[in-house]
Image (tube, rainbow, N blue to C red; front, side, top):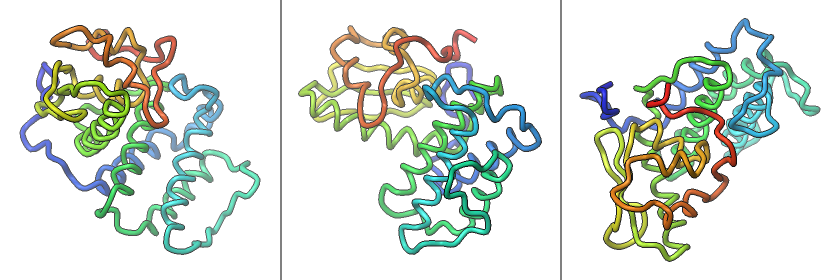
Length: 234
């Protein structure tokens, strides 16, 4: 990874499934054999513990596998009381039954959600951020598209987003401003993990205020207080 956050050679838009599998491997590796982390709070997900975060990832995977038919699990958890080890086993089982993720938005949404929560987990437990994670490019594509719909809804001019040596046009028409930064900081800003002040501290070519409301979109909303630091502040 280069010092300015641009992507290294070969950092391409890989398949959503590759990114999703990397998230699964990473989360399982971070939590296996560490039961003491189950009740640790996850600051980026208000009210959630680590166990809640893993349960969410399993539930999303279950929903996608059930898009075609209901799949029986060896260890169903109707009362939501399974521990983290059981949930990780269930996630592995479900992941092996996922349908192809290469068409439409299902795969990118699933992968973006999983990457977002892997990063939430890493900040919560103090684990390093994987700056060359293969899920970043497709996830940035998706959140730039999603935020563009919000920009249009608010009647704002388009803005250009630059990160990882690439750029996106967010919103319709010609962009009036450009915002950029390290691809991790930009991704976290577009997924409700940075405060408005932190978003305003990205590299803007003009005043940011007009576009800040657009960072509240779909399920994402900037927190009132910081839950993590920008990479430049670490």
